[in-house]
Image (cartoon, rainbow, N blue to C red; front, side):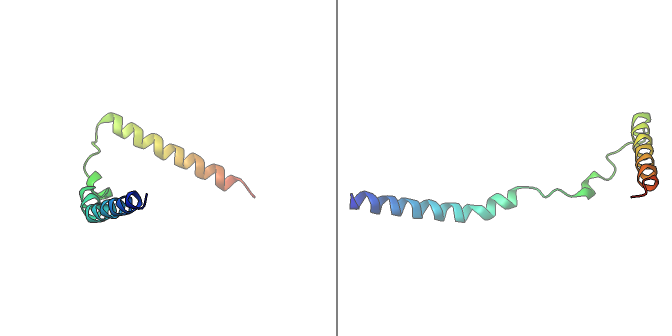
Length: 71
């Protein structure tokens, strides 16, 4: 039993070391999301303009609702 416990302890220690060694590699492999990558992705076609117009309309509607509420 003592041998098995010692073996397990050694195996866990090796696995922990492997994980510790690979963590920096794993985090470096994940690309950072950056809003600047979105620049130029939206086109000026009719559908995009309609979406933008509807979003602006909704914002103005919400502002009017908030400003009208005298709480």
